[in-house]
Image (cartoon, rainbow, N blue to C red):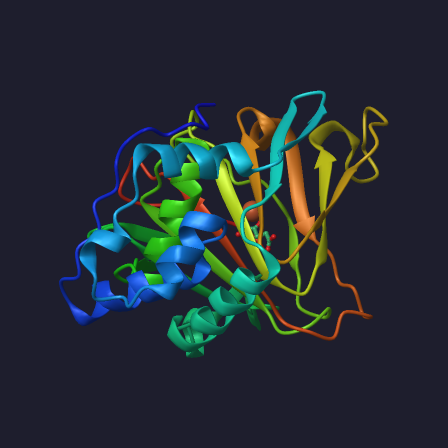
Amino acid sequence: MDRFVTKTRKKTLESPDEEKKKIVEVACQSGQVKRRRLESNFKDEASLSATEEEDKDFAHALTWKKIEAEGLDCDYTLLFQRSEADIVLKELEKEVEYFSGDLAKVHVFGKLHNIPRRQATYGDQGLKYTFSGLQLSARPWTPTLVMIRDRVTEATGHSFNFVLINRYQDGNDHIGEHRDDERELDSASPIASVSFGASREFVFRHCSSRGKKASRKIEPVCIELQHGSLLLMNWPTNVYWYHSLPVRKKVLLPRVNLTFRKIVGLNKTQKTS
Ligand SMILES: O=C(O)CCC(=O)C(=O)O
Ligand SMILES: [Fe+2]
């Protein structure tokens, strides 16, 4: 993985959306140079130019934890400091429009059920997402989503054209075991999972050790996904390992998770409950 992105980012203030993105971005920067930018007024374009050195500093400043098991390869880091993550979460809560009505329901054995969380999809123009028989278009990127996506790219060297957002109101909301292994996803590209809000346990289970017919006994891998964290799921993790976010009754606060993906076909199908 190329974590040291050397391209220069040129910042210009073009539209109100662009301006908002810059404000969120600047407010979220950490470190000395970034503090200087915070102190400047946002209209000074020169002060918003990030240099190669700053990009390298940012990538170097991250501490990564490697998580490995048979066929599982993940990288974990805190991408946002707590204060930054607080700001980002607030912006996401204002900006993200979640599906409602029938778009927020799933077919299970011929019956419609409410999805035990809220979902939204954003991405490049023309990208479609097929969920439980419904084809949904990705909404256009919002300023905050662009800022998070770019931060993930700076940190990892990977680009993404789509994000699925899951909002868990509290520990009752969850996502069932599944793999993000759809044909439409570029399998060489990792899936980048960024979390804000309540810390929740994320559980990986190997495909041959699931259920009553398990052929092997492989220990699950559990990761606590913290406020502001990034979990990079690299190939071949999604070939062999299912993952879930189980119910945790003691969790009382909301959590917003964003999984950045690279879609190569036009559609994406995901089967989760
Ligand atoms: O909320 C999470 O951490 C996981 C979400 C997830 O697995 C998915 O969006 O496919
Ligand atoms: Fe997933």
